[in-house]
Every structure is written in C-alpha cells, then in structure tokens.
Length: 428
Image (tube, rainbow, N blue to C red; front, top):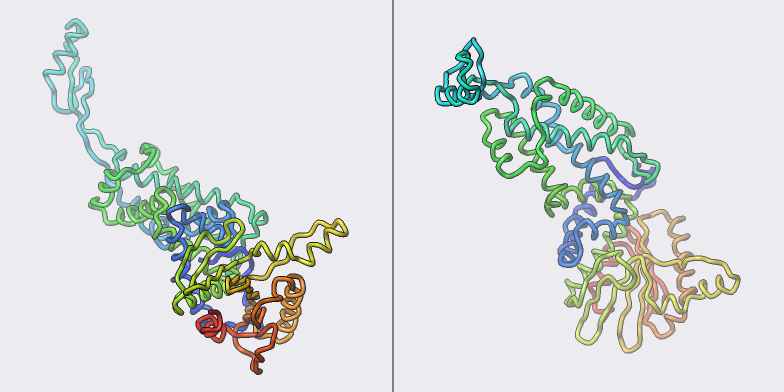
C-alpha cells in the first residue's frame, strides 16, 4: 500500500537498508497491537491508532478507503471476476400470476381465473389467470453484487474528489499518480457496470444480511466467490470494524508508509517498554498513547517505579522550564519544546532520563542533535539537580564509537546499546 502522511522517498544518506527497515517495521507491527489490546476496553482501536500516529479520524478514514480499494480482493473482483460474470449472466425464471385477455400464455390457474371473473361480474369470459414464466435478474446474488459495485463506486468518487493538499497525503511510489490512476479506472469501470441493462433492473438492499451473503457464497457461479470476499472485507472494515481487518489496514496503510523518522521513534518507544518488561519491571498501567497529557505507562520494580512520557512532558518540567519563563517575561506566546521521551523515576528523589531519538548516522546531524539535547537540559536544569547521571540519552541508529564516562551528563547510544542499558540494573 503506497501511502503516507509525509513523502517517504529514501534519501541518499539514509542509514537504513531495506532489511533494516523491514526489521523495524516488523517489530513495530508485532508490538503496536499490544497497546491497542491494552486499551480496547476504554478506546476503539481507531482511536488508539489515531493518537499514536498523530492522525485525524478523517485521515485514517481516507487511508481505510484507499486500502480497501487497492486491496487484492477488490481489484480481483472488479477487474477480473465481475467482467467475466457479466459475460455469463443467466436470469432466474419464476412463475408469476398474470392476467391474460384473449391470448393465453402459461399454465391456467382456474381457481384464480374464477375469482378474477367473479370480481368482474362474469361479464368477460376471455379473462384467464395464468402462471407465466418471467425471467429476472433481481435475485439476492445480483442484489449483493450491485451493492458492492455501488459502494466501490462511491468510495472511489470520495477518494478522487478529496483534496490531498488539505492533509498532505501523498503516494511515495515512483509514479505519484499511479494510485489515482488505478482508482480512477476502478471508478469508470464500476460506473459502466451500473449502467448495464441487467443491473438497472436489480434493486439495491439497504444492507447485505447474513442470508444474502450465504446465497452469494453458495452460488453455482464461481465468479461470485470474489464478490463474497469483497463483501466480507467491506463489512469487516467499515461496518463491524473487525480488529483483524483494521489491524491489517493499519499495518499496510499506516505503518508501512509512515515517515521513517516517526517509525523509528515508535520503535524506540516500544523497545523501551519491551526491554523494561524483559528486565523484570511489572506494569502498573499503560494507557492510550498520545491521548492527553501525562505518562503513557508506569512500571515498578520492588520499590522503584518509572513513568514513561512520549511526546509530552512531566508536570515538573512544565513548572521549571527556563524557556517558558523567559517567553512569558517578554509576553511572547510560545509552546514548550519537548524531547521525544522522558523517563521519570521515583527513586528516593525524583530522577529523570531525557531521551531524544534520531534516525541517523550522519555526524553533522548528530552534532546538531547533541546541541539540541543540551538545550533541553538547560531548559529543565532544575529537574536534574538530584538525579543520577547521565541525564540525557541521544539514541541514534548505530553507535559511533568512543568511551562513556560515569560523569557524562549525556551519552550517545545506538539502538542495541540503548536496549542493553534499559535491560541493565542501572535504572533500578
């Protein structure tokens, strides 16, 4: 699924190989849904995803539509199965009681004939009620087919009419317009289907019931198997919002195209949580990531507890911000700058670890990032006076060498040595 909230073109100095990217993506896919399940009692999966990925419901809804339209299930159904189905359509024949005047067509129903003549006063002996065979395409299978075509056509139109500039959603495929071309072809083809003379006589049900789905599944025509699969995907994704269907949509439609820097931040967040648990820390609570202020999780080891903040600040940081006080002194309205993560330990006195995450091996970028972290430490310096060193960790992709000193106020670590640090006894 070639989608993302930001352009995902791989830069020349990207430190990730395709294997690196797939490893990170796989780790996030496996562990992200743990947060969804943890919060499933109080929040819908869509809400969890929107807050973690910083998506609006409108953005996620758009990605759902595009995932559905570009899925193999719908593509096979629209471009292969339905055209073949139209070439071999056979109507259903049913006997319908009709009035015959003079000419008789079909089997005469004498009971109905006498009743009909009696109503007319027996004045017209040419009246006959017959059961004539009538061919019709308005059967449950065709109704379900028209329902699916109509929904696909509607979703295509909504996606094509949507202005990408509003949400800055772009394809990161080599050909930026490829996805639009595919959906435009699907829209034109489904519009043609709906103009078919057979389809015009078919009614559209308000919803596809289990009984209709069963008729589609048991149809003698093999092409209806694709229609059945398409209807199930539509129901699971848009009606029931089935967790497995939504999970696949999120993985394919949100995580894969997610900006790689953001993906790495989520990777380090989940790596921190998994490493704490591996080292024996017990979970006190975990809540919706990105939902409001405060820690997203708290863990405890014997008498020590740690709170994890992601893209938000502890209250003591807000109170003691030098930057905030300076801006207020000059009546400048400015929001607080915040690191990617903060660990708050309840260990005798409050102890903090500030974590900044940068997906880089570029030494020039590392230099700038170190300066940024030192700025954070100066901004919140009152919060670190009684803390244990180091106060801050800059997490990059791989270690750059060098030796750490126990008196360093900040250290630079790659993802592997950062994981070892979280799993060590240094945090207890």
